[in-house]
Image (cartoon, rainbow, N blue to C red):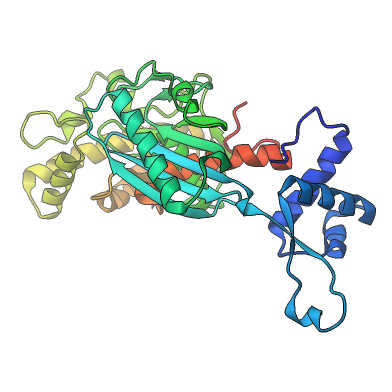
Length: 384
């Protein structure tokens, strides 16, 4: 795989290898001369590094251009072999397990989603995750041993080793050694992250927050969560509990979000997205009770988001989560944040939608591989 480790004979050789490989991935089949110009390294150094990378399988000689073939011996060209390995991003949620497969450049090659019952125990949910991955690899024609890293994201407070310290959204989730359990299914690193954190990373990578380094992503729901990037780095907090805004109502001992969004006087089930969608639909159709419920919910959501905005001063707040009804939240949220916040941020709807969490998990895996291949310091998702 070409992993760069402290056991290599020369630190300088490792640095040169990382520089050349990083340049090759960014360039379009450069020649040796072009690589020398781009890297600033000597020609013998670049030539030696390229030959070593070819032996490792990470670089291959590219076909000569058609025009050059008619002009004598063409200059050799090289390219990074993104197909030399693969990455997985997996979302384990209340109602579904989703998986994305990519090459080493992060280009998505396929996706599979399986439904799972909200009441499913942890073992059944993990079995669903394994089945989802197996189906994806089979459909894509990719061997399991080509996987170089797997990112996994789900609800709950996640410790550095992948253990879910607290996860009330899913049965049997609290205390689950999720990373340890999943590592038994793979021969590569498995990195576990909170779902809102993963979604924040995804929107920063290729979504509504691309280009912004101070970001808050709100995973809207009856028990909302949030992920944030501060100065371009994912902020987890000391124990991984940053962004758990779903517990803010406890400070005032107020009504639970399930009660606020109810139109019947009976609290909604925290995981019943269909019930929530019906309330939003009725509100759009003019039902007075549903509109009152939606107003109460938006007010609570504004308070939750405002607490983070006042503390973190993000450039943009991205709202994601439910597939239906969230577009009606944006304007009221903008108006209320303008009232509460000293410097109101931009407010945008998630571009990635339901794919945000799995996409963030994939980015987690890609960051890990980039750290190994390119000796990148301080990636977005690296743990301190």
